[in-house]
Image 1 (cartoon, helix red, strand yellow):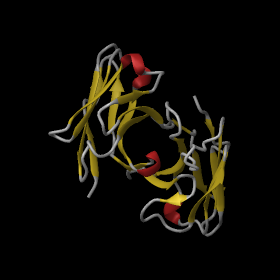
Image 2 (cartoon, helix red, strand yellow):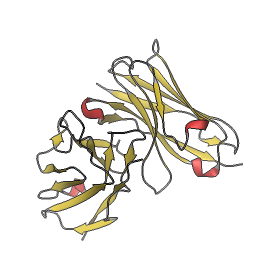
Image 3 (tube, chains in turn brown, yellow):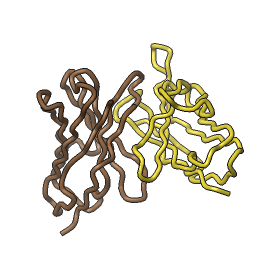
Image 4 (spheres, chains in turn orange, yellow):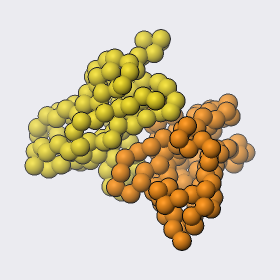
Length: 117
Length: 112
């Protein structure tokens, strides 16, 4: 059974760095692409970036300067790091597995993050 | 970047009715392989986000046949026939033709 689970801090101070981990099961991160998507409270979805199955990455150009996505293939984990956080980075951060057509066919429950002092 | 416009922020319908949600792209989502890189998602409170349709019209595994994706080029529609109580949710379109991938703003189906 395919599962993705995000974990990370619930509260981060402004200007600090957010680190979220996506632990997957039921598939290998070396066989499927994984994206990060975020959602501010009460708002829509925004694609943050992806790590392709070959290990290369692609980032939303609006966030690129603050982002890093990496993985640990031995643990089947994908990592999101975003620095210089501001209050408008508050929201839920999801990881999602890609399948044919680059559809995001499986999502995690999300990690809720609040940026506040 | 490609902009996806979902004109309707909300749609009010009664169970059993048919509803159509539209998504317009700022440029064609047709790739050289002949496929459209447009997918549809459902968000319900307390549930993980669910992929319904990919390549504009292909249902993902286990999605009921009442969900129908159609369209081409820049105009796409998600139709739900005989809406069920569990279908009241928010629906998003997503393009994965070009980076950055972009979502529509979402359309909320509400009970009339």
